[in-house]
Length: 145
Image (tube, rainbow, N blue to C red; front, side, top):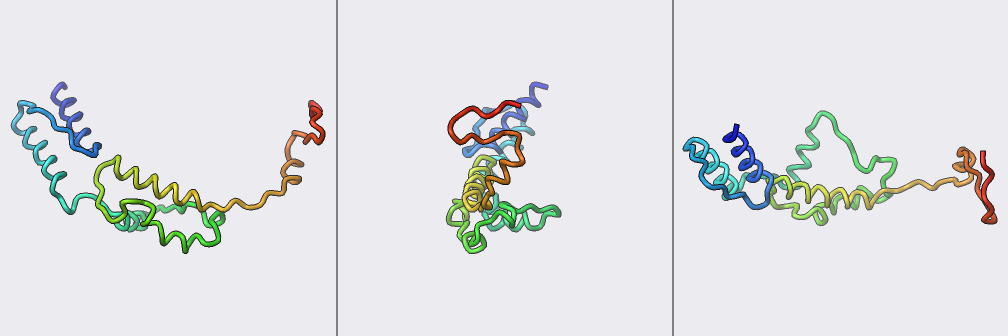
């Protein structure tokens, strides 16, 4: 169990960190060989990771897709502005392979998309007529129910 936990911690730190965790030898040659192979694949692999364009293609190939913001709540020029996404979800052309770096890029995209939500005009009187709270006009307390 101890060896399993040690292996799990080392692999977790290797795959979920921006900078690979350098562990000492585990004493098991087979396990040390596996960890060495993981480290080497993360160091020099040009094919390791995904660019923003590759991520987008993967999302489009999924059987269930969602859109954010939903079409009814998009700004009028959203399609035009969406073309500028690679400028804002940086680094869009760099291959990212670790969870923290992929999440940072996803957060950048979410911030960009969130800033282009159009909220429809609200009819305040219609909204208040549906509530149980009576509006006050002079600062007097509203009648209690």
